[in-house]
Amino acid sequence: MARLIFGTAGVPRSAVNKSTVGGIERIAELGLDCMEIEFVQGVRMGEGGARLVAEVATKKGVKLSAHAPYFINLNAHELEKIRASQDRILQTARIALLCNAESIVFHPAFYLGDPPEKAYNTVKKHLEEVLNQLKRENNRVWVRLEVSGKGSQFGTIEEVLNLSTELEGIAPCIDFAHWHARTGKFNSYPEFAAILLQIREHLGSSALENMHIHVSGISYGKKGELNHLNLEESDFHYTELLSALKDYDAKGMIICESPNLEQDALLLQTTYNSF
Image 1 (spheres, one colour):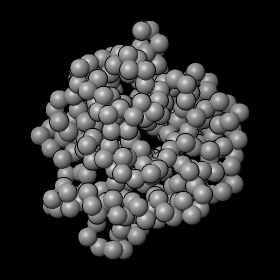
Image 2 (cartoon, rainbow, N blue to C red):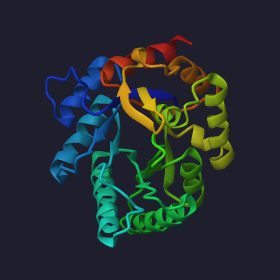
Image 3 (cartoon, rainbow, N blue to C red):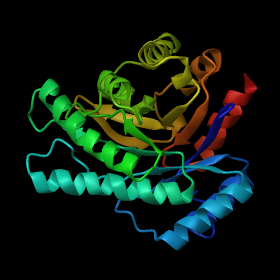
């Protein structure tokens, strides 16, 4: 992707037709460039629907990604839960490929009281099995692990970058709002720049040219993320983030997860283009 492009997590609120196709059409009308298909409650799209999505997205010039279901825990203590989680990732990747989506995104796991290094090894093992299956199917969709917003969730920046370094086909989804909520910090230009340098250090300059970013306002407490807010109602310094992304020549997708979706996506796009 030759630049940073902006879009919404799911169908824009103002879309009259609330289907994925209707969402893509509305994204194009708004002058946005991408959309994340939300399969958060389950992958409920068939092959025919996915091919239509791909066709409309190509025609409208809208890039796509897909968010896998929330019910994924690759560190579950029961084998059937692990297998069900792997299956949800595979289902998402298969439909994403048919939709012509470039990436799938998900929260990989919860620690469940395990030491972080034990959880890391478990998640890595089960991710590897997923990647091997996708390789057998010749599915080259990027599998992106999302930086998480709570201390109970697996997904620190370090964990996500290390897995992206160690496993071919894994890439990060940097949710800057989540990381701010989780740490209570990382809300200034120097801190955003430090994250971008960390990405470059781990994964090379090419990773900054192929970014997948989530942004929203956020409220948080001692345990991290509470809920998403509109940007102007939160303490998140989105202008400083956009400035750092511009200065470090980041490219890829910025997906807005604020409750008002397209309003904040347009705000981010306008602010970024004003620099």
